[in-house]
Amino acid sequence: MRPDPGLALQEAVITGMSPQARGDVRLRLAARGKLLAWQQVDAMAPASELERAELLLRRLYPTLPERSLQQMLDQLAAAEAGGTWHGFERPDPLSVR
Image (tube, rainbow, N blue to C red; front, side, top):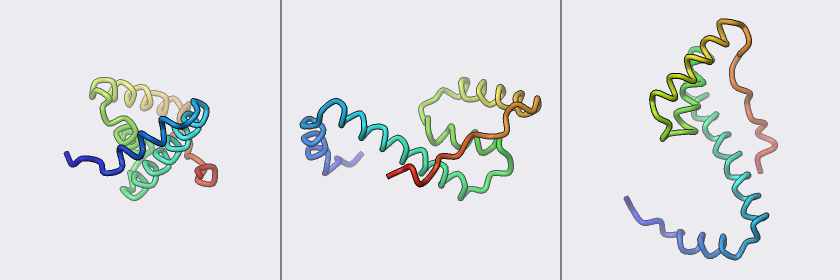
């Protein structure tokens, strides 16, 4: 893996931030990451909400064990069949700064 050229600068900036500011940055980056994952999945044009859910989960949680992912997908499939799940809620792109 290549070294990150901005890592030292990033660490210096983070060290100088208050805990509240670090939390705000983390929340903003998490929101951007979710929006980016949705954009990537939309570009893949999944055939069903369950397929979309699998792609999103794989993007958002790449280290999630396969067994756990399959259990979640099974639960979502059962909820979809029961009419209680109709897909994940999309993030509002306007709320991401």
